[in-house]
Amino acid sequence: MNSRIARPEDALVEYGFRRFIVTITAQLAALLAIVDSTIVNVAINDMKGNLGVTLSEVGWVITAFAIGNVIVIPLTTWLSQQFGRRNYFAASIIIFTIFSFLCGNSHSIAELIVYRFIQGIGGGALLVTAQTIITESYPIEKRGMSQAIYGLGVIIGPTLGPPLGGYIVDNFSWPYIFYINIPVGIIATLLTLRYVKSPKYVEKTASRNIDFLGIILLSIAVGSLQYVLEKGQDDDWFSDNLIVTLSVVFVFGTLFFIWREMVYKQPVVDLKVLKNGNLRIGTILSFLLGFGLYGSTFIVPLYTQSILGWTAEDAGLLFIPSGIATGLMMPVIGWILQKGVKENYIVIGGLTIFFIYSFWGYKILTPDTPADAFWWPLIVRGLGLSMLFIPITTLALSTLHGKEIGDGAAFTGMMRQLGGSFGVAAIATYISHQNSVHRMDIIGHLDPSDPIVQQRLSALQHGFFAKGMPPNVALQSAHQVLEFSVDKQSAVMSYMDVFLYIGVLFLLCIPIMLLVRGHREQMIKPVISKN
Image (cartoon, rainbow, N blue to C red; front, top):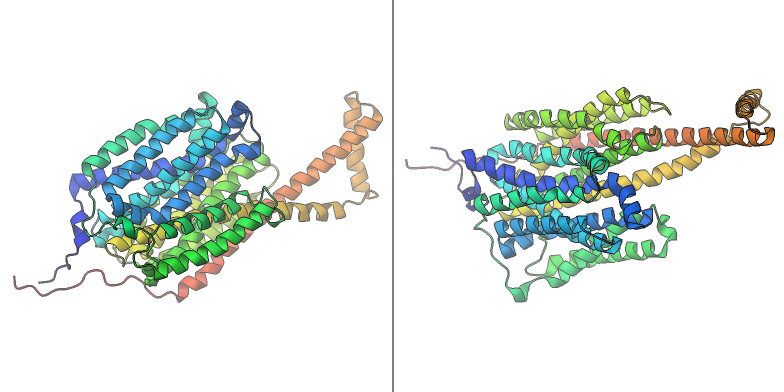
């Protein structure tokens, strides 16, 4: 008789109603953190005016949360061991909820930044622990479906933030974007304490053996990197001394951290788990997924608001069709994986579809693109992301067992977050650079003696003159309109470049996936039974 070899983590598998409740609980907690990573973006202007600070200062509200996230994610598995997964998960929800209230109740920008950093620490823990809980609540042969369920929150969450935040800011006030976390946090905490189990296969590290140096090195390294990515564009990258200093700190901090974890007997992050080929590939692809997910979520609202003049709420609502498409496809992809289709084939399909979305976006961008032109490209985006997230996470975790699942989820989660930060930073820098290039190119082709240019200026001047302006002022206004047209056109061309090259980046990854063999190792092992 054949049967699956029993492992200690099998005790965490849930069935029926309990699996449903555990899944909902973990998903609620993950959504708290994911939605909060983007919901603040549309409230920046209101915060700036209410707190009386500059745009650069209020930008730290986003940066602080991201730094807190990326610092705690690699530590999550170790912290779960120290306090028990259920206790750690519940404590993280409580921290996130309490500091959500404090963020909304802040009276100064300094308070808000500190509270957002601590909220980010709680949120980062929720992301990874929720994935681990959901993964281990399902039998190993249904991991594809478990990742489909978790992926619903990860993919849809960032798109829910802007429209939800826009609605709250327009109809209430910015503190309520934090207050809405409180009832959800309370419910998630109670459900966690009642239904979530802690694994029995982990041992608590003695206090004298805690890898404090590893924790410090990790915090310094990833915190420095996240700061560089978040603030590099604003501070003109390596022309700023702080950016240079933190870049050096990141490099040496990372090298010392790797050395420390390889030689220390009880490391805070087990780097040896990266020997698993599936996880290595999944980690790299998670970075690419974060780049595409957060990069595309960043560029479309930026384009529609800065070029087309849309409101933040309208820009956020644009992503709802994409989110619906993703939600409908996630269970389908999970079912396809359960039927035995190899992950790398689905990833190739997702990369191809994401290229189609990017190329489509490149083709439709104009200074006056209508709203309905974005509808189908964004639906295609949702389909592509659903075909990337589930196979990538399933591939990464499919051959891990026990504590390794938490370690693997931490690595993929951190790389997805860093990929998003790299994506946003790279896109912002590239747009700025290309904007200057295209502007100079357009100006170089504007010959003042060209009859077409003269005719355009003359028509504009006569229009302003007809409105009562003196001739010299009318001519000056005509030049300003022409200058504005040049700036707008160069900006549109810069966004077109970004769409095209993101698509090319995804397309170039397809040959790599073709070289990847089927990485799904045999998960059901026969044993001889005397029954």
